[in-house]
Image 1 (cartoon, rainbow, N blue to C red):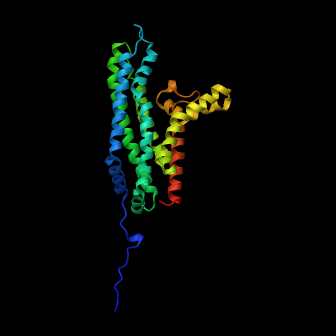
Image 2: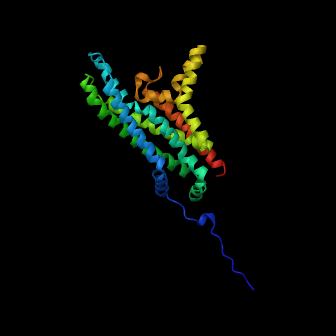
Image 3: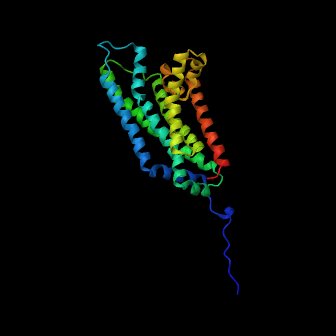
Length: 276
């Protein structure tokens, strides 16, 4: 009596996703989660509401500010929602990867993409592009809301030199980079709670702690460190007047990119070395 043995397919014979397939898969994952839609919607709605509130309530006591300040005022009214939005995308970026670890879906992802790094790259790209588009909608929509109200108060931006538009693009870019930075932290920590704490701590608490140290101890190193913190450099990307002293917009952008690179590279290295 003989038994028929069925050979199990080897790992090499299993079908693998193409680059386009991996991107499509990650896009489906991102948009099919209800919290993603709500998070992006909240960013847009809150940005519009803040722009409306600021533009409608600003008061110059009947005297319009100097011409060189007017574009800066319009810019700040249009981008103020980014301060709030960065906290939301910081959470969303962590959950994009940590949610798969908590549900066990990461095993399916890494089985379909055994080299692992293409899966992380696809997550980062999809998250970056989606958040950048949402950022564009937020800041340019806020500009359309704030501009007429501010013009009624005698505040009009100078659209001729392109600086305002460029700064709005940088604001959307910063929001997208925050999401990718948080994705890297989520990959490193593999924990929703830990990743969110690290992400929001870096964005929100670290500048406060360093500024307190600088104020209480007069430590020179703390003052020197302030411009190189993630959130401070991010603010300097799109609002030069509020950025750290000593750094221009290009340098602030490089500092933010360095933070994102460290986070994402660290996550990539650990993703390759650790078991799912």
